Length: 448
Image (cartoon, rainbow, N blue to C red; front, side, top):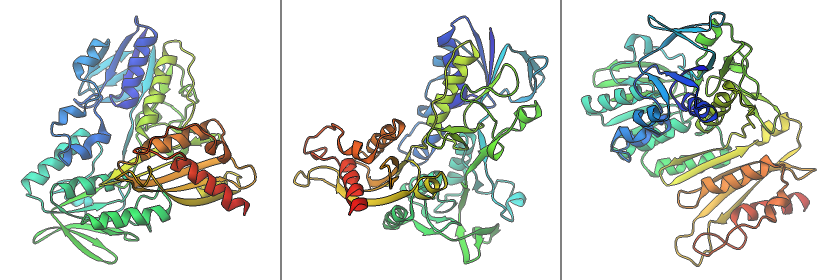
């Protein structure tokens, strides 16, 4: 069996490793467009900040590790064509034959219509941040331009993580967001506190602000908005991603929502012997029972494993995503899972969202901090639909959102949360965990 995998990030590596695990006799070849297979793109802000001094530490596994696992790596091999009839792919001038193929081409940055970007040509201190190469470009600009000021266009996860990273390096950072809040994936009630925290750390945030031009000025770069101008030594454009599917589409692979590759839950495409996984595909949402575009590293790992297993004869199925996410911004962590109020209503539920404030552990033990929790559940059935949390980085926010994610996965009600047997010790929690206090508050509010 000859398995070719296009892409050397989360989905592609997971597919290759799973295939070898399922069938050690399979010949697995990964074609990687650059020289950085299995690097954590999510970790880039932490190298820029200096928290991870050596960029090599961002590798989930070294090249030697991957080769020892039986993967044949072809670095700097950008695939330019797939021929499903001949079962071949072309990378530069080389043709590779396959029995099965996994496409893991990922996503590419979404570039808003900003005047001047084409003229600057993504040089002179204007950058996207989506690959190891992008990271090195940003680092070079910071050093060569002796940057002291930065403008970040986009206040999503990467935008805020990079705001922290650059502020930690001593830069004066301004974040511009065209929507009316930072972190659009959480409710405004929590985003307000996150924005306040950014301000306390010296980051200027301007939301409801659309950028229309980036140009060079006498003292550096100038970012023009409808409300005024901002000067900067370096500008980052981090306004989201879109699936990278041109290669697949040219080979006759069907595209679905938002131009992502259409796959079933076995990660099969419409083309025989061709699978796909990761940020280039649409994702099954286990609550909505439909496909969405939801690019997440954790999802890519799981989808890649399913694709790799099935490509060599397995019978795996992708269970689906709830969109569970967490992000650290300075000393705060924001996290969420499941459905927010508007999406739940659109899905036919009768949602009610209740916010609660509870300490992360017993207040008499030093260091307790408040956690804001917003629970969304169905008014009639009490079924838990979603949860959002905001609290100090030491308050185990990411693990507490996982309690909700697990409960939602198994159809739990709000009452079920209150009855969970969760751990307790005064330095870490209370007899009633904040996750349970929030559930009880939701029930009390909706029955009063």
